[in-house]
Length: 95
Image (cartoon, rainbow, N blue to C red; front, side):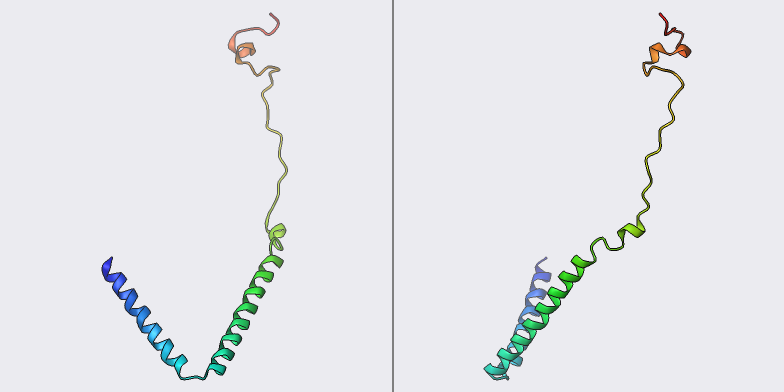
């Protein structure tokens, strides 16, 4: 576990150093422009994905689902659900 943590920290340090070197070369005005362009790009993409997802909710579900109506369960011929009142158990219902 400690090995993984050390590796992750090394990768983070490498990426941080590389990003700082790249950003240190451009002027503050260009840096602000890059940040704003990235913000607008990712923000627009986020809004597009959200609106697209909401628009497509349930759009094709009705075509894919086949709804069947409930069929009547076949019942036995007797008039009672109590097994003691059934003629096949030796007791007559007229008693």
